[in-house]
Image 1 (tube, rainbow over the protein chains, first blue to last red):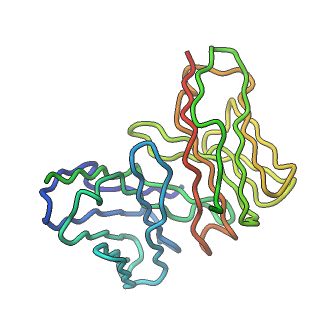
Image 2: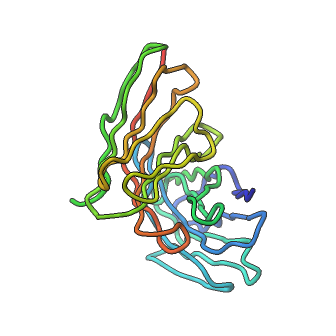
Length: 111
Length: 114
């Protein structure tokens, strides 16, 4: 079965610094989703990537999918306290079933 | 606002008690899902449904039952709660198969079994 590994598990950055979160799949990705979760709340959809080499940006967050479609990165530029939360990557499980998720990366931004 | 609504938001159960978690969506989505989230384990799929009247098992279905009698509702039942079912439960819905669309998530139900 497919597994998603996220790294790092957690990180603390100073406000204004850049950071990168990685998501690596054991199998080729057909769709890679990034979600953000604030403590005690549900998941908010950020971006979806499908094509090898694809890159998408929303405000100060950029997500990329590598050419081999087995790894994705989420990059935050000039981090702010509002970026704090848990970031999860998700990908297709077995065809016709549901998304599987990585264990998440907890981001703290210190001001 | 349109979206996915979960009730209740919080619940404490005694071991052996039963309860039903309700998920309602008003987006006319075909697909609905129940996940549980535990520290260090991420989100794990319990059951899912690809349409009204259909259900299927996910990764961790034991101890849970589900029903999808109406397209907009997906119920998760615990017949005899156990402390191992203490978790945060999330419902999600989507337009089509997983690789064609993202999901919309509810805000979660925090369940404690004592």
